[in-house]
Image (cartoon, rainbow, N blue to C red; front, side, top):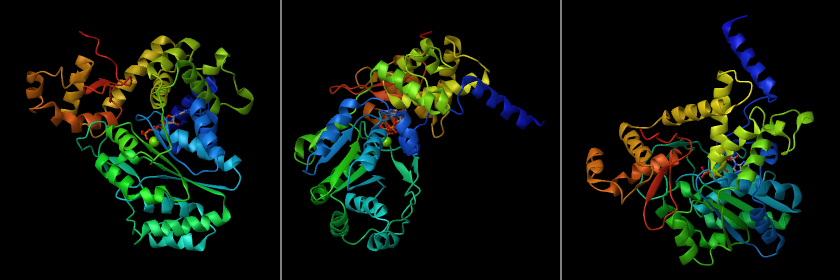
Length: 416
Ligand SMILES: Nc1ncnc2c1ncn2[C@@H]1O[C@H](COP(=O)(O)OP(=O)(O)OP(=O)(O)O)[C@@H](O)[C@H]1O
Ligand SMILES: [Mg+2]
């Protein structure tokens, strides 16, 4: 047998020993298939209840779902839409991630037209925009820029150029009218509002007021940046429900881990949460440690879980003991620090945050600023935004000061 075959078989052996077929974890909900998401989606009962009870009403609503990076906004709205698709009668649902340089009306138009596969006019509209009905619109690439706190970096779009319709709002209204002839209800989810810079988003929302108040339901997602607050306060009436997704409780995270692992086990090998086997190859102890470290953030559970399993298989570990888990955390730290696109200055800032544990505009010294070749803390914001978007640091929820701390994907400095 050649070497590659042997390595492959060896890996297969480890995974079958663990009773799973593959690593179940993923970075983003948008790459999970519907049936996979249905299997792994955990918690958020109250939030689901809130949204569904609104949806029971006749009156059309606008809902804003917001929360930090990786908290589960995409997963949440995809789950909501999936349930509606299966259970709500006469309801058309559409999902789209906001493309760069595109207004909300055009975005909503695209989302809706893609769901109206039988409607010639809708398909024609898509064609005119240079789009195929079932084709994904864009791929994102982080380039890192932009100095507004908490609001992310710049995304370079490998775009298919969209020929924006001349009068997107009117086209949307016309298409909506056609949709409402067939359906009682049209629900359009526009994800990733926050991946644009705040000023743009604000303008987008202002421009889209007419559309947002049209005959469709809207679910939008964003980060809880200053902008969101601004929208909630000053544009009162724009949203009927603004729902913040908070970090999840530990027991929910444990259940989530079980759901992920069950999702890659055979049908006749599904364990309940109480069964210690449910977290294999973890032990209940290391499973709890992993959940703990994930701090209630689903993406952290996914990323840590994935790296830990990779490391454990490299170590040919039958069980993930506390020692193996620690190796996995070290491996995670190395991998996330080795991410593409980190420049020397980015790493210097990251090191400083690791050293201090919390870096803020108040505790940074003159000397440290000089070392980083800047005069003011605010000049570091583009780098801080980039590190945040790469999941290396997060901003602490402090309104008064800007405080940044490492995410649990990184190992804390041991303080030597
Ligand atoms: N309630 C949940 N149950 C199970 N998995 C979840 C849940 N919420 C999120 N996840 C998983 O966590 C990861 C991150 O979630 P998601 O992509 O929804 O985050 P997000 O808030 O949309 O992030 P971003 O701000 O980058 O858009 C995904 O792998 C997703 O499947
Ligand atoms: Mg998302």
